[in-house]
Amino acid sequence: MLDIHQILKQLPHRYPILLVDRVLSVEKGKTIKALKNVSINEPYFVGHFPHRPVMPGVLMLEAMAQAAALLAFDTLGVTPDDKTVYYFAGIDGARFKRPVEPGDQLIMDVSLERMKAGIFKFKGVTRVGDEVACEAELMCTMRTIA
Image (cartoon, rainbow, N blue to C red; front, side, top):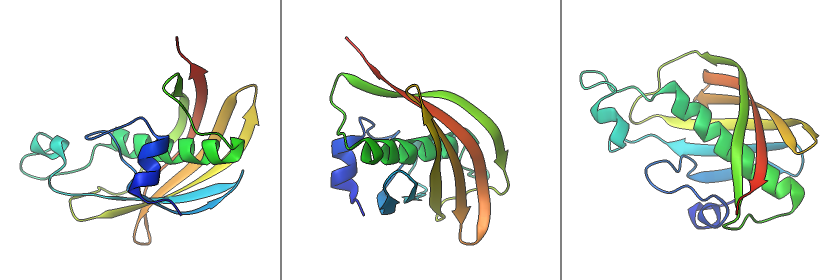
């Protein structure tokens, strides 16, 4: 379990792109369960859409990738520094099953499927209550920057 203060120590993201509010559980090398509270105050709702606010699907993918990064760091036993960046390497099979609106709480379940040659492959499913909102396979890699 990680609270927001512990998440801020691991992820370089900050408002408005930090999309993980809490980690509910981690099974080292296997799975992570994280949550994101969706608020009407999110900046993207102003334009997406003014008459019917809906969270962009790409941000649900980003939220799952941030949870995946936390799982990768826990798996490797590392805390990233200012010279480490965690990048998307690919997204496969992304599906959006229901709109996510202000007031919803996203529960992200991400499992580590494979780790080979510095590439991590994850399976992610995001739910609102019992309903699947988004699912995808995510590939990520860590790189050191100058």
